[in-house]
Structures are given as C-alpha cells and as structure tokens.
Amino acid sequence: MTAPSQRVTAQVQTLRARALRRSGIQEISRRFLKDLPGMIGLLLIVLAVLAALFAPQLAPYGWNAQDITNRFAAPSLRHPLGTDELGRDILSRLLYGARYSLVIGIAAVLGSFLGGTFVGILAGFYRALDSVILRCVDIMMAFPGILLAIAIVAAIGPGLFNVILAIGINEIPGFIRLARALTLSVRDRDFVLAARVVGAPDRVILVRHILVNVLPSMLVFASLRTSTAILVGATLSFLGLGVQPPRPEWGTMVSTARQYLAIAPLTFVFPTLAILLVVIAFNLVGDALRDALDPTLRT
Amino acid sequence: MAAYILRRLLVLPIVLLGVSFLVFLVIHLVPGNPAQVIAGPDAPPETVRAIEHELGLDRPLYYQYATYLARVLHGDLGRSLRTKRPVISDIADALPKTVELAVAASLLTPIFALPLGILAAARRGSLLDRGLMLVSMLGITAPVFSIALALMWLFGYTVHLLPISGYGGPLWTVAGLRSIALPAVTLAIGSVASVARLTRSAMLEVLNQDYIRVARAKGLAESRVLLRHGLRNALLPVVTVLGLQVAYLLSGAVVTETVFAWPGVGRLIIYAIQGRDFPLVQGIVLVVATLFVLVNLAIDVLYAFIDPRIHYG
Image (tube, rainbow over all chains, first blue to last red; front, side, top):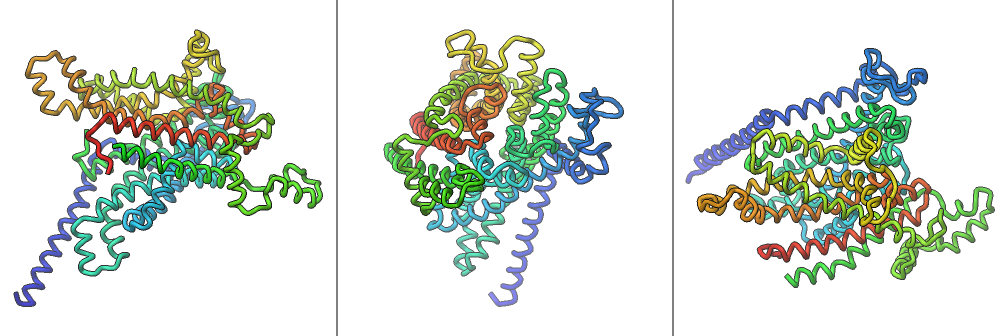
C-alpha cells in the first residue's frame, strides 16, 4: 500500500471509531432520559439541591426560630407541616436539613469514590500492590455495616465533618474492591494489549483505557452508595453520634421526635418522609444509570 | 475445595490481627491524654508522667499494640471505666441478647420473604407484583430507626399490644416472645424486603429456563413446578444474600436495641460511647468484628458445599 492510501484508511478507521463512540454515549443518555423512575429520582434530587441552596429564601421561618407558646401545632397555613417541641416550623427545618443530608452524602461518597477508584485501579493493574491492598480491604470489610463508622465517630467525636470522614472511610473498601474487579476484567482485553505493544506508557493506558472503561460502573455504584451514605449519616445523627441538636439534620429531628412520639407523631413523620424521598431518589437514579449502561441486566 | 478452606483458615489469623490493629489504631485517635484525664486538671506534670508510665503510654506505638494484643489473647479486654467490671463480662452479658435478636430476625426473614418473592414472580407484572415491589422498596430504603419508631407507635402507643422496651425473658417464655416481637420485626423488615426482591428476580430467571417449560409440558401442577423445580435452583443466590444479611443485622441491631432498650451489645456500645468508656467501646468493636469474620468464613465454607459447581481459583 502506498503511504497516502494508508493514511486515508487510518483516517476512515478513526472516524468510524469516533462515530461509534459518540453514538454510544448518545445512546446511553437517551436510554437514561427515557427511564421514568430515573427521571422522577433526578427531579427529586434537583428539588432537594434547590431546597438546600435556597433554604434561607424558601423557608418561611429560621431553622431555630422558637415559639414555645405554639408547640406541636398541627399543620396549618401558617405552618404547613406544623411545629416541633420548641415551636419551630418543621418545614423550614426540613429545608435547612437538606443541606446536611446532601453534603454528608455527596461529600462522603465523593471522597471514597476518588480515593477508592484510584487505589482500586492500581491494585488491579499492578500485581505487586494487589495482595497488600486486598488484605487491607478485607480487614476493613471485617467490620459489619456501620460499625467502623461508629468506632471512628466514637474516637474523634460527633459533628458534621467527623461524620463525613467516618462514612467516607466506611465506604472506601467497597469502591476499592469494585474498581479492582473492573480493572482486572479490562486489563487483559485486546485494546490494552495493543496499547502496550505500541509502547504506550503505563499512565496513558491507565487513564485512556482502564479508567474510561471502569468509570461508568463506578458512577452507578457511587449513586447507589450516596443513598446509603445519607442513611448512615441520618442514623449516626439519630444515635447522637453525628450532627447534634438543635441543628436540623433529619436524623437528629427524628431522634428528638422520639420522646414525643405519643403526643406528636407528625414530628417524626415529616423528617422520615424527607429521608425516604431523598434516599429513594438516589436509588432510582442509580438504577436508571445502570439500566442505561447495560439494558440486558433488567429483570 | 479443601484447598480453598485451608487457604481461608491460613489467612484468618492475618485478618484478625489486622482487625485488632485497626481497632487499636482507631481508639488511639481519641484526642486528649488519658493520663491527664485520670490525674485531673490540677495534677502536677510529674503525676501525669507517672500515670503515663504506669499505663505504658510513654512507650512507642508498636510496643503499646503488642502489650494490648498480648492482653487480648489472654482474654483481658480491660476494665469498663464506668462499671469497673471487666469489659469481657459486660460483653458476655450483652452479646447473647443481640444474638437472640439476630437469630429471631433471621428466622423471620425467609418465612416471609420466600413466599412473597415466589408469589411476585409467579404473578409477574400484576398489581400484586407491582405492589409488593413498591412496598419492598420502602422496606429497603426506610431507615431502621424510622421503622422501629413506626412500629413502636403502632403497637405500643396506639394499640397497646406489645411491650416496647426491655427484655422480657428467654425466648421460650411468653413474656420473652412478646418483648422480642417488635425489635425482631423491625430488624427483619429490611432483610425481608431485599430477600423478597432477590427471590423474585432469581425465580424469574429460573422460570425462563427450558426445564421449567418441560415440567409444565409434562402436565405438572403449577405449585409443583414452582417449588420443586423453580425454587430449588433459585435458592442459591438467595442463600448468598442470607449470609450477607448477617452484616445488616449486626449493624441494624445497634439502632433497634437503642430504640427498644434491648440489652444487647448495640445498646451497650452507644452507652459506652456516650459515657466515653473507651475500653468498653474498643472491646465491643473487637469482639463484634471478630465474630463477623468467623461467621463469614463459616458461610463461605457452607456455600462451597452447597454448590459444587463453584470453583474457587
């Protein structure tokens, strides 16, 4: 073959590959946007984010504005969701509370996503690191559920930042394991072999080939773990180990509502509904992402 | 398969060692100087240093860990700062209660989850199926404390049917059964929801297989088809998940025991944390994590027996 026709063939192949890839992402986005539960979840998340961002503008009262003469008021026009044990407006507190739940969920998962993906890919790619990292992950996963998070918070004390740190650390082993497993399955594929043969340096292979293929599933996992992180944050706060009263974290609100359950069950119902909605929202989005990436997995 | 079990057993001490080291490390994150706390704020520095030396706090970290490990291996987990009793006795009192609760919830789970899952699979797409899936979604996503409080309100305050706190007695007494009812159901709801979903999807996958079609073509009654041919094969992933439920039960127990004042290790650790009773916290975390590792190992070995097709490379 002469040089010019070689160049043309190469160009045609690149264009074809690029077209396939673009249509792949378009295809995935289309499937995602068509998934009704996913769209509902996305809407709920957007609403929650708006509530968190614009709470000062949206909330009719301050989150700590007490009115003892008006304790446990039933829902009314003045207080759409009623008032709590100190006469504070529940709706306002829920709106401000969205900040805590979202920050905890997103920050904790972001940290463990970044750290876990990085370490996991390295573990899957470099056999020397693998056994050490895997052993560390096994040790961390020896702590069931939220026990590790509880232990960390027990040691370093309650508070928003500590909760984020504890949950982040609790979640890291899961991300490491997944990234590692995905890397292992991608590492022996032809295109990675081809890149090696051509002499591509490790860091190029890691980013251009491994990371690109590992990322979608990691994002699905991250979305699902965000709902878990929000739940764990609420649970830690409920147990008194997280965000402390009078701050309006939803779990903290349920914890205070517990004492007045017999006389004012609504103070328990509304924060619970808020938690449920946000957690389900992230679950729906995660499920929709997963189905969009691989429709064959649907049942 | 014997090789697999042997390998797991060899790794076991390493994992347990790592667990004990992690527990030791985490507790050392506690800010402040314990010797200072014991001596009091007005004590002269010499007294603080003397206490430090007595507690071994002036030694390097690895030395402290080694002494800690040596004590643990002799069964000495320290003394509770509050009750002054050995930590291991406090845990020995509380652990059986938690195990009782976890076992009760584990027994309830397949009783409810399997029939519901099979039903949903058999009536796929129907109103019943969709309804069950919706309710199970709530069961999975609802926080355990909310489920606990909702049940407490329903059966404790509204309909005064069941006790809402405390330990009524061993399981074979009526009072014991009544007192364990609410906490066990609370714990079970989450795992019933997820096991039901899993059973449904496993059954759906199995029901599409050819051997089911043959069974139906042979003219077998539908119940026979579902149970004898369908369920048996669908059970495998379900058994896996039932093993994973142990983690969920152990951590869910913390909240459940706190809400229902159930005297298990879950409630104990919360009390210990609130009372800054670090020896007790450390002891409980160590014991629970060790137990979890051993239970997981047992389940993995069992799993290898159940499905001989699984090859552990």
